[in-house]
Length: 277
Image 1 (tube, helix red, strand yellow):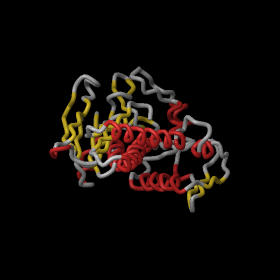
Image 2 (image 1 turned 180 degrees about the vertical axis):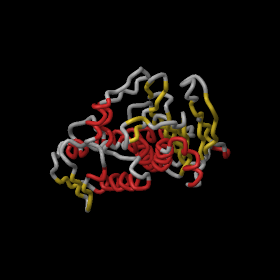
Image 3 (image 1 turned 135 degrees about the vertical axis):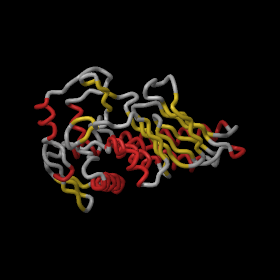
């Protein structure tokens, strides 16, 4: 998951806590093996090296592709799983960089979900293009890992993969889980708020840890696939609460992609949210 992952179990039973941890780890590793773009032995690699040939996918992969297609539609093309090729021209390590306009233009030639043929569990990707499920993969892994943990223990638990998390219910005595949201201006050293979570998911998106400085301006790592550039006037941080981590993470990302309209976008969807400008 490229981030610290943990499962907190509210129990005095060491065996139950251990079983929960194993269940979460095995499911997280399964999803990473299956959907990571860094591997050469999974369905994503097969799709990305298909050279324009149709690829039939299994039910789970089809579900994620359907979800990604829906996100593309409702975001007016702002959410696009073919935009991962833009990483070739951007490095979000906190340094100063202005990518060459020609390089961005060349990368954009390989971006566009509308150019992909997707029907009846068969995907045809034009040669040279790629898909990258990183925009939904970690949050999906949280939901799947939580489902497996729930089979392993009846105790309340919190699954946390790099700050994207899900709580199964209140702790003993009706106590909530306390979640701190990182201050993007003082990453790792301060919080902008503390949220009480009993049941459901939280996901945060922003520029706290992955950003670049261009002409003195801090730009977050979420790119607009229509321009090839980080989203202009995006909030520093967006946190969303939802029933699932996949939903929370998607809405947080879609809000960032709306730039200055992030808060109105979330208000229109009626979800609890916190925006740091």
